Length: 553
Image 1 (cartoon, rainbow, N blue to C red):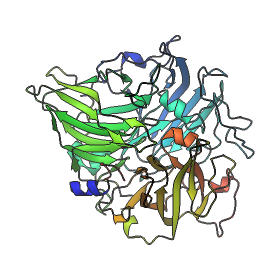
Image 2 (cartoon, rainbow, N blue to C red; image 1 turned 135 degrees about the vertical axis):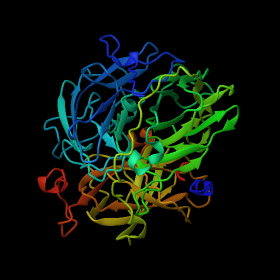
Image 3 (tube, rainbow, N blue to C red; image 1 turned 120 degrees about the horizontal axis):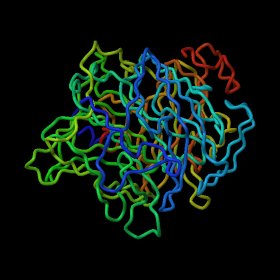
Image 4 (cartoon, helix red, strand yellow; image 1 turned 90 degrees about the horizontal axis):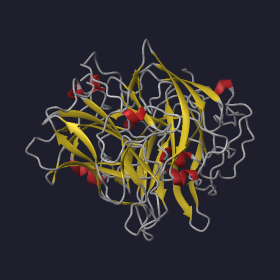
């Protein structure tokens, strides 16, 4: 896919980091500044099942910041969960937070009068649940339901996530999704990667390559705000890159070695623009997947081919998987950077800063390897979506009330309202539908559109057609300058899969989502004859089956 598209669309050794282990006095540890990056521990499914026990924990660090984490019974923090298409993930979650967590964000006023996935549970500052971001699993109790699944302090809950047999192989992730405190939990570090294995069968380029999972997170900056400081600090695999020194983490790599990097922007609020630079020269990266979908894999052949570029734009929640060639020993300075992003007059300050120094060393430990090709590519899920006639077209828009600090995502013709779980669905559709949504940004800062349970196909940016056929689950909608037309994107939504039920779409800058920028969509089962209101948890509503690099805009 040519670069003009992006301008248009704007070893086998597993190293377990010492800070992965929980301690009574330090349950959510972090690495020291300047540490060497290690990938999270990998946990794999066996015989179609991956069973894992998570305890949700918190602590207040010495600098006053509140941390949150998911920890296994062996004390491993935020492991990477590997499954195959068709597998089941059984996740047993225990909430070990105190009833009143220290320094926790204040919950918004919210009612929940309907039925709950956890009968009797009330939304509190200590509530938690788990969202399986990007996956096409059911929005029902004990699967990927975030509206009423509330696991309170001292409580336990079992998830049984059934991955579809046509789930694209790639990078997904998990994180808490309690409205009102989602930002605090993700800023605190409670997140990890999910990998649907098998990407080498779609793109053999990565077969046999050593791979690393690299997770970018953000957090508050301790102390008094300074004029030149970014809105948030960032870290790489829990190695802090703090303001003002920006001391980078360290990635050791064998000289000239090709590696497959699977990068997740698990930031609550920070937009990332990645670049790899050797002695001032940006390196070309071979992008193999975005948002869990292999690139150029939806043309009917089910085979993927790379996208080549020097920069990769990652909104909060965005993922990119790419091949990088390590520096030679003659390179003096090799860095992984995030570049400045102009998020608008009212947006956050996301400046240039290094994430990691890349050190070429013949003694660098070999990461785990991507397996060899084991079979033909799986069937493509979306291959005919681009040519499918939409059943309906809708217009939505992001807006803000600066006086009240309220944020909205609104269907054209409806009244803007902040999110409440008792709000009726803003959109009702039927399983099997294909819809075109045009989404405007009427605010003077960037917003990031995300919808649960499905991917979408970008069609237009500000009226200009987008080519390439790359499917996403999160996309940047650029800020409005304050005059002239509102920036807008047009995307094709695919409701033809097995998903039915109530789920949400929202801005994935979680500060905005917590402040109200979220709404409910109801997908009625294909057997429904009319778009009637159905109780959110009626058994009959369950699933029938148990350039976007550069701006993504």
